Length: 149
Image (tube, rainbow, N blue to C red; front, side, top):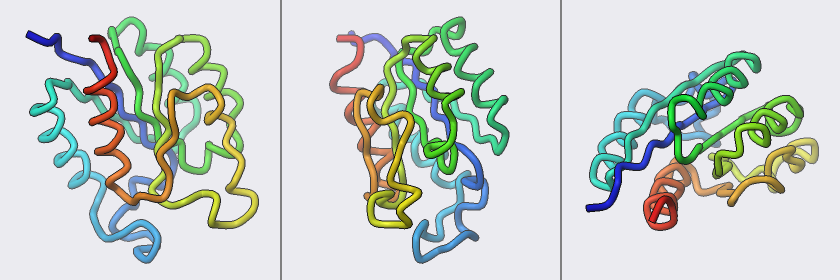
């Protein structure tokens, strides 16, 4: 039997506003509805999904730091606006050496120019951008196929 995979899902600033915020870009599904759907899919994939959303950079960093002690096998992170600004989150991810997939709901390369640079992409196992909320599900599927076998 395949071992249970422990995955930490991190959602950055303003993603708590999913369903209300710029529906033309982010859709009308709320974050809690998305998390609920992801947890249902995770069960089928034998993944234990832990999640956090924070608008505070230090909270995200502390959660990344604690991931090693919590025996997290993989991280899915949508750093949101921290994508373009946070070297501290980058350093935290490097420090814990837990593989991660970077996810973006919108295509960051098709938006404002300042959004096209990510401080995380080059150290990630992969980047999923512009596929809407489906990107999260693709990340789970990828982890299920590639992790801990």
